[in-house]
Image (cartoon, rainbow, N blue to C red):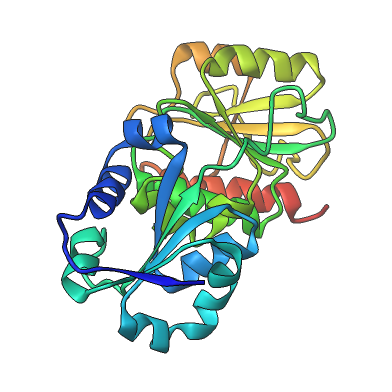
Length: 267
């Protein structure tokens, strides 16, 4: 494979990568996204993500050679870039000088493929990309059968989500829903017990809910306002994590991780 070279940050291909990194619309229209860092590029290649091109500095090619090998074997184009070009592309302050242009894969989970025996976590209208990434990482670690997001959550392929997920985006089954309340209702029709994470007098504790069983889903809401009334009513049941009276609430990703652990701790 011939290695090409780009030395100018004004090169059209570099401008395209910058747009893809910064704009969800560009990613949606093109079906492409950008991965930064040697480890994430390796994770993408090993997970079978389609890699259009690998961009790297000479220093990175030497320093991270074992990480880059799977991507080099999988992609059809390798581009040598200069350090100033790498800094133009970087979403992080201290870049390693490694980037990959990747194809967004087909959804790994659909409404039709949701199983009555599955254990699912649902995120409604979260705002923080870091929280989405952290939940993806926990969902993968605890063997969650599927992570479901409303379509107003941060884009899975944004740099901040990719970085926080540490490769979880590439391996965790995910479904993005345009009508989450309707999807919740269809899950209940399938026999999946759905519980809204909310503080109210009728809510069960996470232990009482026995989440470590087949056919269960927990729904977590926005970091600031929680779940809407419509979402709680769609679920039909509520659950909460008992915490100290000195604390008002948990971070959304922390709560999600606890629920995910509860789903697996005995089964």
